[in-house]
Length: 179
Ligand SMILES: [Zn+2]
Image (tube, rainbow, N blue to C red; front, side, top):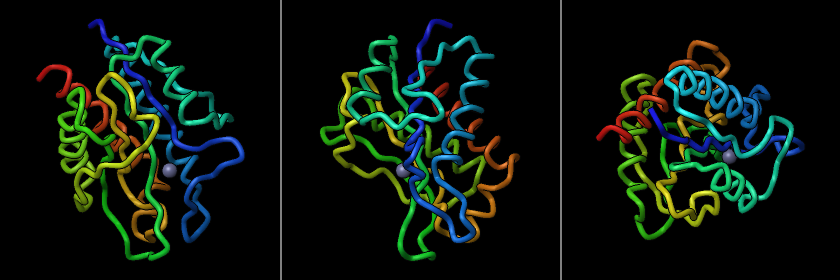
Protein backbone atom coordinates (compact mmCIF):
# COMPACT_ATOMS: atom_id res chain seq x y z
CA UNK A 1 0.00 0.00 0.00
CA UNK A 2 1.52 3.27 -1.11
CA UNK A 3 -0.08 6.00 0.90
CA UNK A 4 1.12 8.71 3.23
CA UNK A 5 -1.09 9.88 6.07
CA UNK A 6 -0.44 13.07 8.04
CA UNK A 7 -1.32 12.82 11.73
CA UNK A 8 -1.53 16.01 13.77
CA UNK A 9 -1.76 15.84 17.55
CA UNK A 10 -3.61 18.89 18.83
CA UNK A 11 -1.81 21.06 21.45
CA UNK A 12 1.29 19.74 23.26
CA UNK A 13 4.27 21.21 25.07
CA UNK A 14 3.11 24.06 27.32
CA UNK A 15 -0.44 23.97 25.86
CA UNK A 16 -2.57 21.25 27.52
CA UNK A 17 -5.70 22.02 25.48
CA UNK A 18 -9.00 21.38 27.29
CA UNK A 19 -8.81 20.04 30.87
CA UNK A 20 -11.26 17.53 32.36
CA UNK A 21 -13.06 17.78 35.72
CA UNK A 22 -10.48 15.49 37.37
CA UNK A 23 -7.53 17.07 35.54
CA UNK A 24 -7.18 14.96 32.39
CA UNK A 25 -5.30 16.99 29.75
CA UNK A 26 -6.57 17.00 26.19
CA UNK A 27 -3.01 17.06 24.78
CA UNK A 28 -2.21 13.78 26.57
CA UNK A 29 -5.37 12.10 25.26
CA UNK A 30 -4.64 13.35 21.75
CA UNK A 31 -1.09 11.97 21.96
CA UNK A 32 -2.38 8.60 23.19
CA UNK A 33 -4.74 8.29 20.23
CA UNK A 34 -2.20 9.53 17.67
CA UNK A 35 0.49 7.08 18.86
CA UNK A 36 -1.91 4.14 18.64
CA UNK A 37 -3.22 5.20 15.22
CA UNK A 38 0.36 5.56 13.97
CA UNK A 39 1.14 2.01 15.13
CA UNK A 40 -1.88 0.54 13.33
CA UNK A 41 -1.20 2.46 10.13
CA UNK A 42 2.48 1.47 10.13
CA UNK A 43 1.50 -2.20 10.48
CA UNK A 44 -0.74 -1.72 7.43
CA UNK A 45 2.32 -0.33 5.59
CA UNK A 46 0.82 3.12 5.41
CA UNK A 47 3.51 5.73 5.94
CA UNK A 48 2.76 8.26 8.68
CA UNK A 49 4.05 11.82 8.83
CA UNK A 50 3.50 13.46 12.19
CA UNK A 51 3.15 17.23 12.38
CA UNK A 52 5.27 17.58 15.52
CA UNK A 53 6.94 15.69 18.35
CA UNK A 54 5.32 14.92 21.67
CA UNK A 55 6.65 17.96 23.53
CA UNK A 56 6.17 20.51 20.75
CA UNK A 57 3.34 22.92 20.03
CA UNK A 58 4.08 24.56 16.67
CA UNK A 59 1.76 27.00 14.92
CA UNK A 60 -1.13 25.51 12.93
CA UNK A 61 0.44 26.70 9.68
CA UNK A 62 3.78 25.07 10.52
CA UNK A 63 2.06 21.79 11.40
CA UNK A 64 0.35 21.76 8.02
CA UNK A 65 3.58 22.58 6.15
CA UNK A 66 5.52 19.78 7.90
CA UNK A 67 2.92 17.21 6.85
CA UNK A 68 2.70 18.48 3.26
CA UNK A 69 6.49 18.58 2.97
CA UNK A 70 6.55 14.99 4.24
CA UNK A 71 4.33 13.94 1.35
CA UNK A 72 1.03 13.58 3.24
CA UNK A 73 -1.84 12.66 0.93
CA UNK A 74 -4.45 13.21 3.60
CA UNK A 75 -4.45 14.79 7.06
CA UNK A 76 -6.25 13.86 10.25
CA UNK A 77 -5.86 16.31 13.13
CA UNK A 78 -6.79 14.67 16.43
CA UNK A 79 -8.27 16.82 19.18
CA UNK A 80 -10.78 16.26 21.99
CA UNK A 81 -13.47 18.75 22.72
CA UNK A 82 -13.95 21.06 25.68
CA UNK A 83 -16.88 23.17 26.86
CA UNK A 84 -17.71 25.31 29.88
CA UNK A 85 -20.81 23.13 30.35
CA UNK A 86 -19.96 19.65 31.65
CA UNK A 87 -23.12 18.40 29.90
CA UNK A 88 -21.62 18.89 26.43
CA UNK A 89 -20.69 15.47 25.03
CA UNK A 90 -20.29 13.49 21.83
CA UNK A 91 -18.09 13.48 18.77
CA UNK A 92 -17.72 15.87 15.86
CA UNK A 93 -15.57 16.42 12.80
CA UNK A 94 -14.38 19.77 11.44
CA UNK A 95 -13.62 20.59 7.80
CA UNK A 96 -12.33 23.82 6.29
CA UNK A 97 -14.91 25.99 4.46
CA UNK A 98 -15.48 25.10 0.84
CA UNK A 99 -15.91 21.31 1.09
CA UNK A 100 -12.81 20.73 -0.99
CA UNK A 101 -10.69 17.69 -1.81
CA UNK A 102 -13.27 15.21 -0.51
CA UNK A 103 -12.67 16.26 3.10
CA UNK A 104 -16.38 15.82 3.82
CA UNK A 105 -16.22 12.18 2.72
CA UNK A 106 -13.18 11.57 4.95
CA UNK A 107 -15.04 13.19 7.87
CA UNK A 108 -18.06 10.99 7.17
CA UNK A 109 -16.00 7.78 7.26
CA UNK A 110 -14.19 8.82 10.46
CA UNK A 111 -17.47 9.58 12.27
CA UNK A 112 -19.11 6.35 11.01
CA UNK A 113 -16.31 4.14 12.32
CA UNK A 114 -16.13 6.06 15.61
CA UNK A 115 -19.89 5.58 16.02
CA UNK A 116 -19.46 1.82 15.65
CA UNK A 117 -16.40 1.49 17.92
CA UNK A 118 -17.03 4.13 20.59
CA UNK A 119 -20.81 4.68 20.60
CA UNK A 120 -20.70 8.44 21.27
CA UNK A 121 -23.47 10.83 20.29
CA UNK A 122 -22.85 12.15 16.74
CA UNK A 123 -22.76 15.97 16.65
CA UNK A 124 -21.97 15.88 12.93
CA UNK A 125 -19.58 17.67 10.60
CA UNK A 126 -18.85 21.34 11.36
CA UNK A 127 -17.24 23.91 9.07
CA UNK A 128 -14.51 26.06 10.66
CA UNK A 129 -11.45 27.98 9.53
CA UNK A 130 -9.01 25.59 11.18
CA UNK A 131 -5.65 26.29 9.52
CA UNK A 132 -4.24 22.75 9.73
CA UNK A 133 -7.12 21.66 7.47
CA UNK A 134 -6.59 24.46 4.93
CA UNK A 135 -4.59 22.17 2.64
CA UNK A 136 -4.80 20.96 -0.98
CA UNK A 137 -5.55 17.39 0.17
CA UNK A 138 -8.39 15.78 2.19
CA UNK A 139 -8.03 17.19 5.72
CA UNK A 140 -10.24 16.72 8.77
CA UNK A 141 -10.05 17.62 12.44
CA UNK A 142 -11.72 14.95 14.55
CA UNK A 143 -12.91 15.33 18.15
CA UNK A 144 -14.03 11.88 19.33
CA UNK A 145 -15.32 13.05 22.75
CA UNK A 146 -15.28 15.85 25.35
CA UNK A 147 -12.60 15.79 28.05
CA UNK A 148 -14.81 18.23 29.99
CA UNK A 149 -17.71 15.76 30.25
CA UNK A 150 -17.34 13.56 33.38
CA UNK A 151 -18.49 10.33 31.71
CA UNK A 152 -16.34 10.86 28.62
CA UNK A 153 -13.33 11.93 30.68
CA UNK A 154 -13.61 8.63 32.57
CA UNK A 155 -13.64 6.70 29.27
CA UNK A 156 -10.71 8.74 27.92
CA UNK A 157 -8.59 7.62 30.91
CA UNK A 158 -8.93 3.98 29.80
CA UNK A 159 -6.30 2.45 27.51
CA UNK A 160 -8.87 0.13 25.91
CA UNK A 161 -11.01 3.12 25.01
CA UNK A 162 -8.14 5.01 23.36
CA UNK A 163 -7.34 1.79 21.51
CA UNK A 164 -10.90 1.59 20.16
CA UNK A 165 -10.90 5.24 19.14
CA UNK A 166 -7.53 4.94 17.37
CA UNK A 167 -8.67 1.81 15.54
CA UNK A 168 -11.87 3.58 14.46
CA UNK A 169 -9.85 6.46 13.02
CA UNK A 170 -7.59 4.04 11.15
CA UNK A 171 -10.63 2.15 9.85
CA UNK A 172 -12.19 5.43 8.74
CA UNK A 173 -9.02 6.39 6.87
CA UNK A 174 -8.97 2.94 5.29
CA UNK A 175 -12.60 3.12 4.14
CA UNK A 176 -11.92 6.55 2.64
CA UNK A 177 -8.76 5.37 0.85
CA UNK A 178 -10.46 2.30 -0.60
CA UNK A 179 -13.89 3.83 -1.35
ZN1 LIG B 1 -8.01 20.89 20.96
